[in-house]
Structures are given as C-alpha cells and as structure tokens.
Length: 72
Image (cartoon, rainbow, N blue to C red):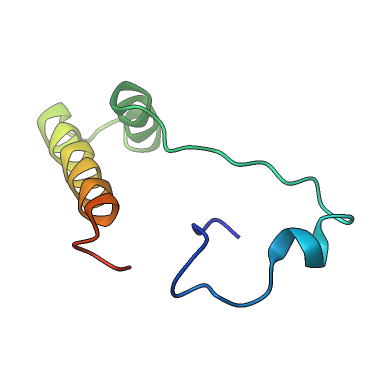
C-alpha cells in the first residue's frame, strides 16, 4: 500500500476496492533534513557522515526512479 501507482503495481484500483473501508492518505517522502532526523532517531550512535551518505543514497535512488532509469 506504500507503493506508487503504475507498473509493476497494475492490479486492483486500491481506492475503488477499499476506499470505503480505509481512510486513504498520500504521504510524500520527507525532505533531506527530516529524513536525517529520522535516521538519527533510529540509529543515535551511527556516525553523522554515514547518515548523510545514506540520505544522499536515498535521494539518488529517488531521482533515478523519477527519471525512469530505475523501474523498481
């Protein structure tokens, strides 16, 4: 349920199938600073440089998906 619509998730239309049962909300990815805060909360003893690298990797992966370079 946390996936974007479109390939490879071309099955049932979630809202038409379950919209009357669930309250549906679209949540965007957090900005870099918020993502970094989440990672720091999850791994308080992890080096900040490593957390910044991880945040950069997530941003790169999202950009590649948006550009159509990565399909999944």
